[in-house]
Amino acid sequence: MKKLSHIDARGEASMVDVSHKPVQMRVAVARGEIRVQRATLALISKNKIAKGNVLATARIAGIQAAKRTGDLIPLCHPLGITHCEVGFSIPKSRDRIIITATAKIAAQTGVEMEALTAVTMAALTIYDMCKAVDKMMRVTDVRVISKTKK
Image 1 (tube, rainbow, N blue to C red):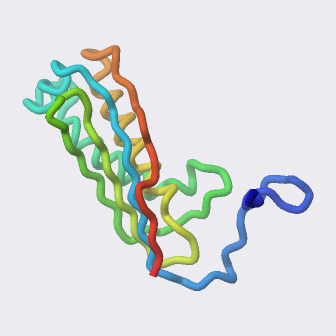
Image 2: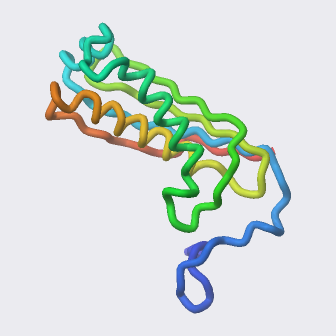
């Protein structure tokens, strides 16, 4: 079994030292979904949610969250990401919104936490904006789809 990277020799939590690693282009893609009622999705699609444009707001929230990941997660390196995008798709079942986030940086450490944070915050924003009309929403299956370095 691999050793936990954020635990030092004394068993204490610590930030990983990446100073010896080379700077590389790193890209991470994360995905998750929020399950909603069909009626809720119809309201979102018609821009009829009282709080405003749900997907536009969720996109901005996701990007902002990716930029602030180092402030939100203890021991996570604060990174000046060079790109983040958040996209949404709706399957034919019309019972969920699939959220995909991509984060990029040229750095000594990866950006999977930034991509995961973007997806999660976008989903939470959708939840917040729609909670008055849908008490059954569920945020599910948030995961890293890919991470690469060159």
